[in-house]
Length: 112
Image 1 (cartoon, one colour):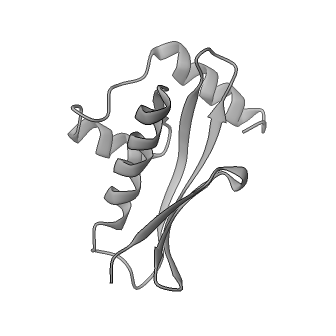
Image 2 (cartoon, helix red, strand yellow; image 1 turned 180 degrees about the vertical axis):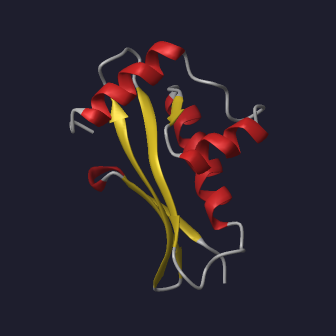
Image 3 (cartoon, helix red, strand yellow; image 1 turned 135 degrees about the vertical axis):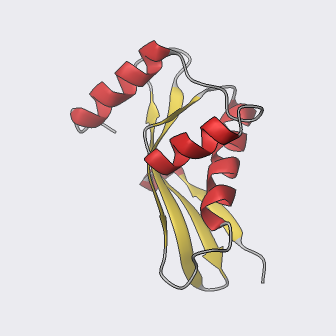
């Protein structure tokens, strides 16, 4: 069965569904302090029993695709997303340093 990826922005989650089961998620927030804003990946999780199927990579690739469609960068604060981005610079450009600082500040302040 194909994995269905759903953006639940209001909840700050990009979810991967395998039928009726939640298979994985990226927790994220929208950085609005810096124009034009950014999508900030905070944490990537693949649920037990769904590992080893490429779900985390699919989530991160989709996350970058959403950001590209919206014309905003991604700030990968999540270690998995950051490692994935480093391996795929053709679809995951590095964010500007000031965006990373702003995202870290927003996350630390609990406003994400």
